[in-house]
Length: 474
Image 1: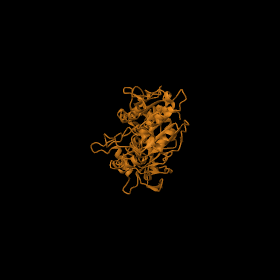
Image 2: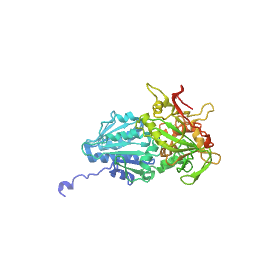
Image 3: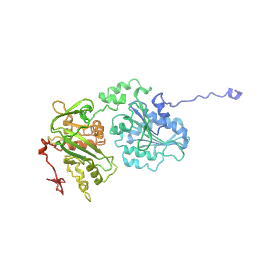
Image 4: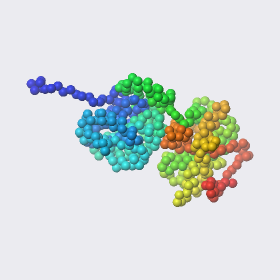
């Protein structure tokens, strides 16, 4: 040490933020392209995202360009305020109008909101090395978020990635759980996308992983809701559904292993149309007598008159023409004797050309308008009440509505649908409700029992349409 160094002032390093041991540290070190971080409240999710950006931008400087989004503008406020506590100390400058941080090394990150598909369209053509999505389950449709992946590119060779946070619950619970949780509920296992080959991983973070929470936080959460809500919030339990619209649902009661449907049971189909959104077609049989079948755990008794959903076709909203969908329906029911069919009444609307129903009829697939009553009025039983009635079952607790285990999309979505906050008697239509609507059409169709094979009634549909939109049958 020379004389100058001996008398130089001591430099003390100031630590503004460091990741906590455990999930936050794993997040910052994770090289995987797509990461879901979190699962419980109080797990340090927002800090993890803000800290991950600092690590990324420190490494790649002016070539690091980030975008952090939430579903609503108001939800960004707390995230921006927390970023100010950290980023100002790093010498970054914030443009309040553009909601953009610019760092001394040239890195920049924008805060924005995505409410609908058109908001995602506004970012097409942009280039980001990091996209952060806060509270992923607030997005009912994954396509809004997935569109942002087209913006992840770098002309300078910077590794790009999507980082998201989420809690159980919310309108997007179903697709988030299916994409990230179900393949490996414990997390940390790399999932390889079968179509793209891209990798994704779930890094779970729970309340006890955050050492900076005050002692009363957990106690306050425990007092804030039902047992299911507390399990979802504190434990990150993706199977704990708070406020489920169909709380009558039980997997071990309503799911049966596929069995051979007796030929004399009446069969019908129900259909919910979707072009950009998913469409759903379900096939049902009406039990003509009581039978015992295998459930996923124990034997299940299906009473006479119960509905058995034995087939499902769930389209992914890839804008298939109505005629093509009709061909797919015919192909799937080639050996079925379909007594009648009901569909979303909207397919009978004529707007400057043939209706969707007419286009499907040209392929030999005919429908009658379904009873679209969602809520009861003037003493009428609502469509949802009819679904609940069948889920509750008969006086012996035997279900009056069951689903083959192969009908995965109705099984995936029906149990987790939530009440609409503004209309508690109706479900939250922002959620993935296409399969549920189809079930409602089926239960409201007044299905009848075929007592004996000799009493089978066959329908021959004619190409003429009644004034009320239904098809004439003889």
